[in-house]
Length: 83
Image 1 (tube, rainbow, N blue to C red):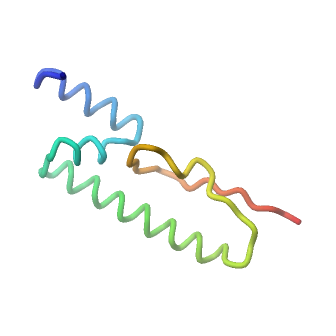
Image 2 (cartoon, rainbow, N blue to C red):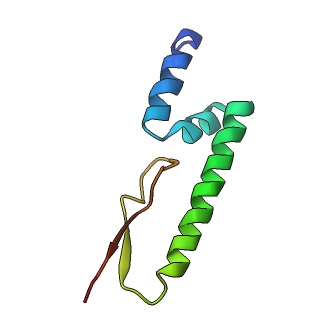
C-alpha cells in the first residue's frame, strides 16, 4: 500500500501516463486537480464525438482508444479505410 509520502510521485507518474483522472477518482479526491481532469475528460469526449460525427459514412476505427483504465488522451487516433 502506498503511503502519503508516495502520493506526489504516484500523481506525477499517473499524469504522465494519462491515467490521472482514474487515480483521482479511485482515491476519492475532490479538489481542484480532479475538477481540472474532469474538465479535460469532458473536452476530450466532446472532441471525440465531433470527430466521429465528421467520419459518419466512412469505414473507420478509433485506434488505441479502449484501455482497461480510464484515461484522458491528448489526441484521437483514427484509422480510415481508403477503399
